[in-house]
Length: 306
Image (tube, rainbow, N blue to C red):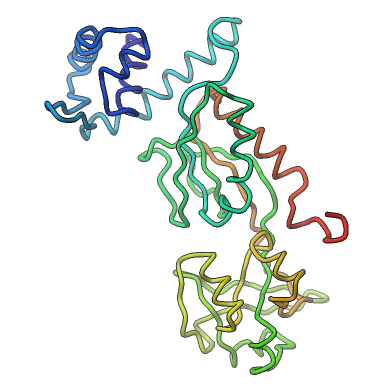
């Protein structure tokens, strides 16, 4: 398969402009159009829909795009192994992450990364909804759930310790739970689709945080909104320590049942589609995030050591 034509297709799919993709590769518009047409003829499928006004991906093109990217990544890695081709990471990296975490910890680092890797472009999709990496043609994602998808690989970014929190005002009005059984009399803020979470206490004592067995009248699907509602006094919630550590230090939130741990061993993972090789651009961003975030997570650093 003509990898130069694949590279042209990937650029055209990203820019939705065949002429611009061709110019980037030093091709005249007519030559770029002819080369794409030849690739489509070879594959027996229309990859792009063209009109006088715009270019769009066909269904077949959207399905083929991640495979085209992988073929090019394999070629680049093979050339790099032989000392050929570009030695610096380059190209567009599509990245998705939970919005609150990305806003707090990833976004402030982006200028440094872009300065260090001037030939790379970052295409970010930030949401608490989980995108399918294969269907969405994503190169890399941050996930804070177990790696159940066998089509993905992952590297640990950091631990994702969870704690129970409430505002001082809420506890003053409703009392402070001393045991997990006391939670049944409280307003628990539930995350959408949240099941009971096991709690482990002193000497192996067990309990659970189960909104279904309590006065749960608030169900949310966004981590930042959950924290803000907790700060406002709406109830008790489970939050990642990275989200609330500054609130705990300032006193706007209080840890509830501090002797008990949320026993789900949550981890922040950097995940990517399973492949034989890892492209230079993905490796560069992963190494950067692990170095700048994972080596010494800010939320695990004592306030007096910051």
